[in-house]
Image (cartoon, rainbow, N blue to C red; front, side, top):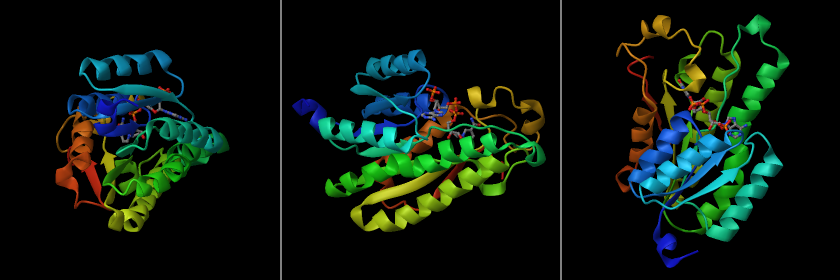
Length: 247
Ligand code: NAP
């Protein structure tokens, strides 16, 4: 690691090949953070994120692992922090939705959503928590839940369960880490324009959104950037909604 890179605050953004994660990576790069871009399938999009991060002059590296695979995730993260040092921030953003009304929801739809969206909390954060504590420096953990985890959503019993679980886990970990100057917060986006929502009945859903429009990935990224800042040092165990008033 170069002397210059040692002073950089590095942030791992899981699922930064596309959508909200990609916007977070770009926004943080523009703010001067070093970015660990992460993906599992979309290599060319991930390379685009890397190029965008580097265009801001920010240092960057790329990791590939499946957040639902516990052993693989641990192996890749442990190797990365052994070689490069621990991160300042972790944004647990990677996620999927497999929707269907509950009577029709098959076991694979339940399992894949729980494994990817909820088990990933353990899979990503467990290998990192002790190293974060051992740095004895302030740090930030941000999870991305959803309005579905707060109020439930038709056709998303699996997704709502996973996201509600993320909110509980985030609040509990925040209590454990608060005295270590490590804040742990959750962002709960509403309907955001990404690949995940490109088949959603947006016109119908907009009727329930007081702001009268879908959100942009950059609007979620702005909240992440604030929570990572020194100004947010006394904010922990919170869920911040970015949803145009949908609740
Ligand atoms: P997206 O455009 O579909 O992107 C999903 C990202 O997660 C991709 O980078 C993808 O990587 C990664 N990912 C998915 N499964 C993974 C796995 N098993 N291992 C590693 N990475 C994986 O989704 P998005 O809309 O940006 O959503 C980002 C987060 O926001 C998710 O947690 C989602 O639940 C949450 N959210 C989204 C909305 C919304 O309206 N869009 C609302 C509330 C919450 P690859 O490209 O390599 O597959």
